[in-house]
Length: 81
Image 1 (cartoon, rainbow, N blue to C red):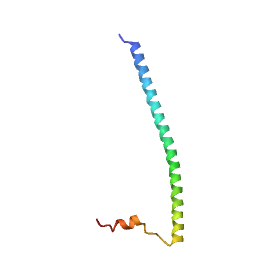
Image 2 (tube, helix red, strand yellow):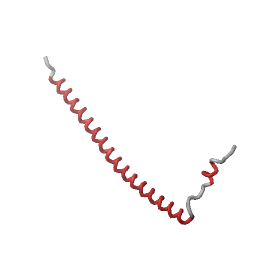
Image 3 (cartoon, rainbow, N blue to C red):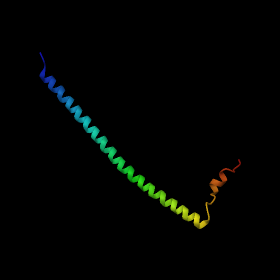
């Protein structure tokens, strides 16, 4: 004899499993969408900062006549122990 109650319970469990999986997929999708928007904003901000630093560097080179030798970088290659 076939147990219809057990079949109904199993079908309900499969349905609940699919609902949980769909909710998980939806949350992952939402998280990725939010991350992409934040990353885009961060990239734009870093790009703008980089451009401003490059402009500032060019102005400093014009004003002070080229690249200056930094003591920490210039002395690093000529150190003797």
